[in-house]
Length: 304
Image 1 (tube, rainbow, N blue to C red):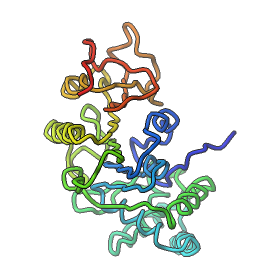
Image 2 (cartoon, rainbow, N blue to C red):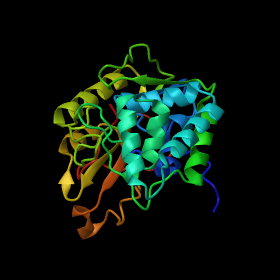
Image 3 (cartoon, rainbow, N blue to C red):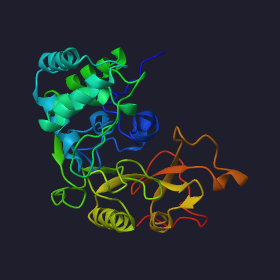
């Protein structure tokens, strides 16, 4: 199998965009001074962005702390710490007791690199916390482990961010300072999806909730960026399992809407299937070379 030309984040983040990079990146402008990844998550998009500088921001402080640690610590030291923890606690696909002891040790004294190691042996490799920021993901029996592929992804990620003009910031989208952005800059948004639910937006993971109020705040922010002449792109879904994001549909009619073929959309957006499929889109406020589609049954208006 030919390896992907795009770097894959070592973090398994629900909603990560690595598989969609072949569709998303060609839609981004070619002349970006500062690329702002406003909901960076596992940073799949930010670390692959072609720009002079990159800011990866996320409200999940644990993930940002991990990215900062990987950027600042020598690779040899990171790998040595991971291997030492695996040996110390006997971590494997079947040693649940060792995993639980390591989880307790991490929660007693959180270390970013230990978080990566812990997640490597957890259920579905997920970074999951309770409201008190205690890591509570269960053991990934008979499946989760630090595979050779995961180690390669980690090494590639660390090589990419070491010395790179990438800044990792802990901030919500409403708190991040965007006042100095100009026309040469670009903001990419991959927020929690209003009509889907993951462990990042169910309001019980210590990192805030996502509902109509937050959705409206983000859309208002994008309107403001557009008024200032700043380019943006928004990933989201218009329909999912019979549900419709009417707030987004109404707002997006003033911009360009490009359909994205997501890996979980296993049927096309045609005919009687429309009620059950997920329709994922990229909404942009600049010209693209890809065809656009209306955000709803009505034809879209001219770009604002």
